[in-house]
Structure formats: C-alpha cells, structure tokens
Length: 275
Image: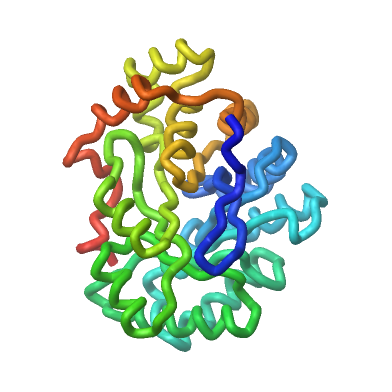
C-alpha cells in the first residue's frame, strides 16, 4: 500500500504510474472526462494525434486549473507523419491542439516497419527534447529489434514503451527486455478492452478485497511496476479506477491472474505488420 505513485524514468523525470487514457473517447466527451479525472486525483493524461481528441484534453486541463506542472501529458506521433521533418511538423500540430508550450512525453505510436522511417522520427524527437520542447521521449508498440535499432543508432534509449498488456496478454518477455534496457513498460488496453470485467477469477479476487474486477486488474499492473492508463468516460468509473491504492494483491491472487495469460490473447494489431 506504500507503493509510490510516480515512477522515475531513465532520464530522471517522474511519471505518474496511473493515468487516464482517452483512446476512443469522443472528442466532445474528452474535456469532461479529463476534468473529472484530474478532480479525482489523476495527474497523467494519455492521448494521441490519431485519437483526434487532443483539443479536448487541453480544454479539460484548463478547466482543472491545476497549473501546467501538475499534469503529465503524453501524446503520440501517428504513422503517416513519420520521418524527420514531418515529425517536427506533427509535433507542432499536437502542441497547438493541446494548447501547451511543452510536452511531458512524446511517443512514436507504432514502428510501422514497412515504412522504415521510425529512426528518422526518433532523431527529430531527440532534437525536440534537446530544445526543451519535450521533457521525455519514448515509443509505443515497439519490439526488441526496434528498440535496439534506436539505441544502437543514436545512443538514446526510449524512456517508455507503451504496449498492449493485460492479464490475458501479459507480454512477460517484452516486459523483461524493456526492463533490461531501463525502459518503463506502459500498458494500453489494460482492462482487455473491457472484456476482463466479467472474468470470474478477477471478480472473485475483487470480492476478497472489496474491490471490482477493474480495480483488481489496475492494481495488478501497478504491482508489476507498469504504468497503466485505463479509459472511461463515465464519471463514477473514472473515480473508481483511481481508487486502487488502499489494497495489495497477495501471492495467491497474482498466481491466479498469471494463469489467465494466453499466447493468443492479443486484441489489437500486430506491430510487426501494422502501419
């Protein structure tokens, strides 16, 4: 229960370990969701250019009136804009839509290996970080070979690798590879796109702790030292998803959850073929 709420990235910056994700959040609902989350205690919002709701994220942050330094904001470079110059241009567009003067974290959304432009994008992001426009830079959906190519070519290690990760697709091997490179693993679709909420094993563990299945899964991510970004537009669910700091999963709980892992558990696209 004394687990810290921030994790220190390999560049020394602190990142809140629990945030609000806004994937598939309608643009017109985004500002309300973000403002609700920040009022509930969240200090980390994760969006992307491809979600088309960056402006709503910026509006929600303004409504919260917390001050820029209080909120950790992540957005992502979409595949169509990979390349050195186009990355610089895309970054400016995201920053303008968010209404911010810097980003806390900018991620390459997918490696898009068929395009083979992610290394040029990475070099552009390094420049933006050196200019102080971005505090931390990282990647999303990268496999080990993609990570190593960036590191070997530039000497700059991503701070974060955001990947699909949930109890039925726990990505233990990639998590280990990230850890060995001092890269923080961040989980997208952490609740298995909602499919896990009716899982009887998770429901039983929840009853044991007086928590919901969703709270159990979020706590599982935190226990594994992952950053986790559950998504909801329902105010009560947003608040509920943050109420996970007052209980611990024991060894039996963790073993039962580990047994849910499946080699075929991926729900999203395969990064090797996408983009």
